Image 1 (cartoon, helix red, strand yellow):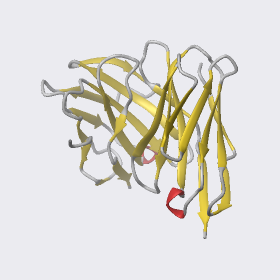
Image 2: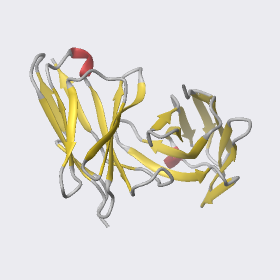
Image 3: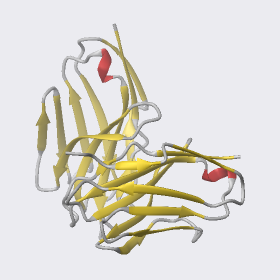
Length: 113
Length: 112
């Protein structure tokens, strides 16, 4: 069974540009989560989508947004990129509900120059 | 606000040793706790999931315990191997958001 996949693996953008990151969950999973892992800041929760709806967002500015498609894949968009947005962005998926295990993808390394 | 702490921050042990990694959390009203492994620059590999009603979970050489009332979990690794070298993260799920709150991790190095 295929795991969570993310694309691209690496992304290099300049300050002020927009970045789009993509995630495909494990088949049958309806929930997708996005996390940011910036150097020295640990893993921070960004967004949670379930059944196509945004259910919760972490303490990030509105220029971080996303969506979930009918096939449960998800996209994270970061507008007006800033240098401090450079990080590893991790996507996770799970079955619906709070008791289920989250499975993570390999991540997208975003570098903003 | 949930806060998760992991001690020690780094650990170096010789191959074959048994070791314990610690995780503590401030809000005991958790749904579950997960232990992960992360290799440098890579994603997270889920090792064990403990539901709030459980006391421990085992997988191979790994055993994780949970004491919800005291806000603590330990990950026990038996007979450590160089391949176990990685950063180990614990994360708890609390509240209605379904998000995981992560600790800062323990960087483990197992030497030959």
